[in-house]
Amino acid sequence: MKFAKQLETESESIPSEWRPYLIQYKKLKKLIAKVADEIEKHGMSVSMLHDCLDNPSSVDQVGVDSPQVQYYFTGEALNIRPCIRFTYDTSNNKVMALLSDLIDEQGDAPLLTRTAPRSPLEYQRSQDNTDFFTLINNPAPTTETPTTNDQDEHYFAAQPSPRRNSTAQVIRDLTELTLHKDEDGKRGQVRSLVVELEQDDEFFYMLMTELQSAVRLQHKASDRFEADINALEKQMVQVASPNQKSDMYAWRQIFSLYMDAQIFQGKLEADRSMHSVQKAREQMIWFTHQVQQENLVSKMKNRVSKSTLQQFMALNTELITMKHYQVLNQTAMTKILKKHDKRSGLTASTSFPDFVGSNDFFTPKLGKLLCAAIIEKLTTIIPQPDDYSCPVCMNVAWRPIRLICGHVFCVRCLIKAQKKNMMSCPMCRHPTAVQTASALNLDEPMQNFLLMYFPKEIKQKKRDNEREQAIEDVEAFTGRAYSPEQIARMSRDNNHNCIIM
Image (tube, rainbow, N blue to C red; front, side):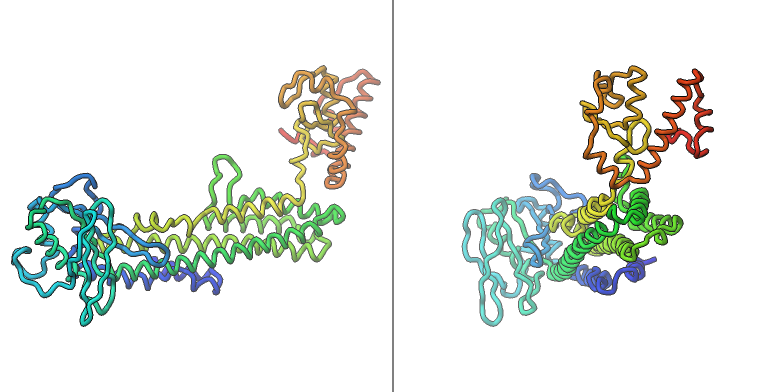
């Protein structure tokens, strides 16, 4: 499928108010033909530019068989100007012959002996190894000082204007003047001749205009997105508070599934990069399906919770759409610059992104920041049990005992460790952390926090502790030790096996 058709098809998934800000690929493609025609009119062939620009000579080399050619940009923002600079040594006959073939459009007559119409350029002065010329307009003459370079003598063609002579004519006459100047005893100098491309200027003006419009839209959308996140955060604090226990557990399960979905970015060390649009959509579909399969919406008793969930889903969908919009524009720019290079022989696909800093237009940081905002502001509203679990039994660390090393364990696991004469911390191996632990190490603020956010888990933990204590009492009374399999059979929940294995 042609990219223009592909762009048109994929743009249908973009909101209608965003579509005018997509790069107009077809219009830019039409301008490329004008750029190619302009280069031919300047006497430069596409194949010659391909050879010179794809395999450029070293800037320090002088006297090569062909002039050194450089395609570059000047200016800034919407006033950038694409230019081609030819640097050559006037003492090298081969170079001068090639340059004569490049710019001579008056037949086989030698460049220095042919007669030409009155030149639109008039020599003014020389200063600091730079020659200045004025451009003579018809009917009234005007002057224009060319841009200079501190290292080489640059001869710039006139700025684009429909009332002026063609750039090709200006370049021919300017080169003839410099060659006649060499006849006075100044041959053997390295000179630079700069061509400003009028149609290429129009092409990049249109491209830069569309890029800046796209950036303004992205910033506007991201500001609105951040405002929506802040508003949604306030709603979730209310609907998922511990006072609404049924909704709190539903939201906790939703956020657990959301983190497992890894919609925008992987959380494993081997998958830290941002996901593609297709991958993000697939993970979003998986997350939505899991929410429906667990029947979490029906578990919500608060109507505001249901509407908040819809807003949360819409927020993630909008972020995927924003990412898709950015990818479409970035792909369109890459494709159009490659087509520009193929038709014109220039190297815009490498020089233009470096000049304008394309990362400022298509920075992946925007998506990362918005994704991080969702995770940090929304998913952290409701604490997850895994963040407050005992590292030994992997259940909620009820009656949390904070050792002198800072690690926290549930009181039940700590008592077992002391009965087995364990002295060091299982986590950091502090030599006396377990041995010196006592009731004074109880973390009361954390205990109150666990009571508020994990009432069901604590209730189950208490039952498990009571059952284990009862088994220990029976073993102490009868002198009989029960195997782990027997303890598992005595459990009220037959499925309550080892949660690790």
